[in-house]
Image 1 (cartoon, one colour):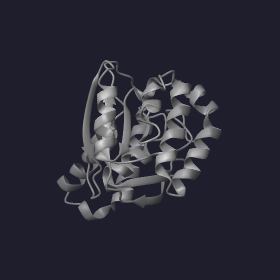
Image 2 (image 1 turned 90 degrees about the horizontal axis):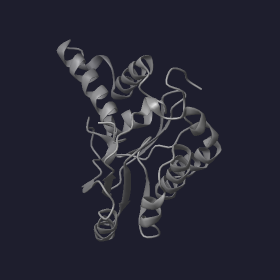
Image 3 (image 1 turned 30 degrees about the horizontal axis):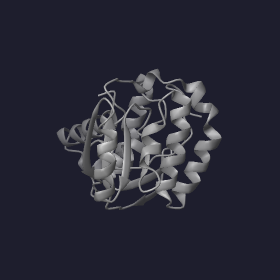
Image 4 (image 1 turned 180 degrees about the horizontal axis):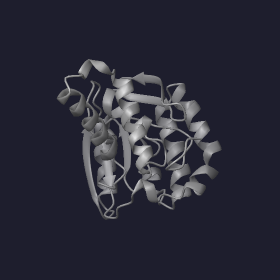
Length: 216
């Protein structure tokens, strides 16, 4: 928890699906609407800075999703058979505590990342987005630079974790580099089928940030 690996979105999805099942109403909402319901709840209690629909949609649908978080719209979904390397430093950070004003200052750069993602250039989108939000949130850019040019890496959510995608051999080499830093690393893969698992292994999300209690 509080590692930037989307456990909150996964838990929200699981709660919505379990509630629908308990009410014998599984067919009452499709998976996109179920995501929206969980995201609205997260906004209501103030636990999201970014809007979280990107995280929730990736957790719910699997694969790679690109979203418009202002309107909770799913713009694109692709299936990628990626190996994924995750690095989690020992510190923890809650999304609701992120500096929203500083995130808003890098919105023009996030727009560039969003355009890249819309075009399917997910690897470059990750790098641009990650470098921008590392600067905004005062996280080191070293882990992202370590991955270049053979893999793509980014800050995961509002941190403090990082993720990298690429071929297995490249990520195994990168893991040795990241393992020199304090914290934990592990290798996984991107699920491509619908799931309610954390999106550390699921998606690229690029979007303008929104405040915890308002939509921009």
